[in-house]
Length: 107
Image 1: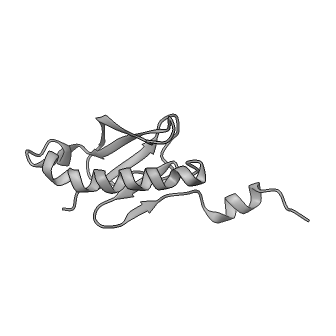
Image 2 (image 1 turned 180 degrees about the horizontal axis):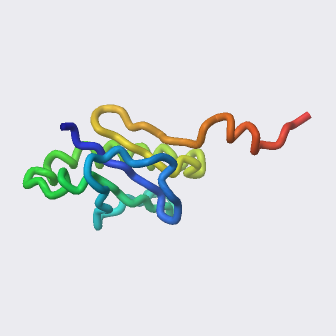
């Protein structure tokens, strides 16, 4: 089973249900944007987080999430939920239909 880690911005709820087999564990470690005060909490499957090799296997995924958070600074951290389980970081947003309905129409 692949390790999957989610980074959820502090003060917000996950946009979708976390993809975990048991229940999610929020890690004590949080990630902060180096350019501002935005912080993200890390959530991972409980069984995977208690594995003896978790610190080594999670290190590259946490590095990817750090880079995604730093890149999100340019968009004022509009994305509040990131997930990764490999080489791709998935930015989870509300459906585009909801965003289009909420945005004001210009002339």
